[in-house]
Amino acid sequence: MKIDQIKVRVNELILLADRVISTDRRIEFVGNSVDSELFQEFRAAGLSFFKNSFGEQHPFYKEFNNNVNDSYTSKSREGRGILKAAKQEIDGGWIFTVKGIVSAEIFSDFLEMAEHLLNESYKDAAAVMVGSVLEEHLRQLCLKNSIPIDRVKNGKPIPKKADLLNSELASASIYNKLDQKSITSWLDLRNKAAHGKYSEYSKEQVEFMHQGVMNFMMRIS
Image 1 (tube, rainbow, N blue to C red):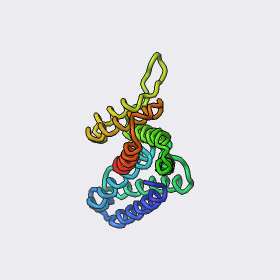
Image 2 (image 1 turned 60 degrees about the horizontal axis):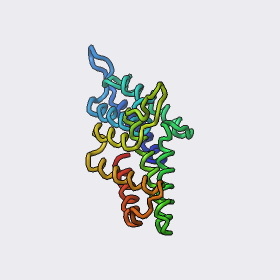
Image 3 (image 1 turned 90 degrees about the vertical axis):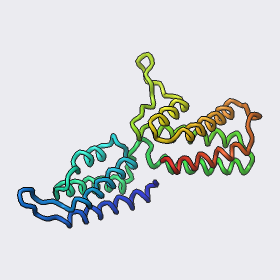
């Protein structure tokens, strides 16, 4: 989801909040409440938006999850307020995840560059570029799903290798074993290119890798 899409979505959710609040009615012995079905739609959509755009560790997600948890009118107003605060950050151009959406757009540019390199028969440079984009995407998936990207050795954080990130993401059911197997082969091809083993793979294999990585990133974002 790119920045323009996020801007559209946050506006849609604010309008949904308005619809929810418009159902406000007074219930004896309970207080002011809104339509419960519409509220649940609002809560689910809001949580999905904040998780995908900001991550589960961001204060926006936590505030929405903890406070927008019942169909009282006041809770819906709190949710609308959190969305408006998020809109200000988005419209202001603040970066709200570790590389976040900006990374997604940069990745797209790199994949386009890799395609150009392939068209010019520079398969080795293209393989390294696509592999690097894939590895960073795995790191972003780990961050998004609260999977540590470092391990501690001698009291110091050491970045995990891409193969380990791949294994842990599959184990957490972020994607299936077939995806894991494909990623393993793509990372192996990237490593061969990075270490000068150019005769061990073909241009066609890099083209297949390029298309596969693009499809994977679109499906698992």
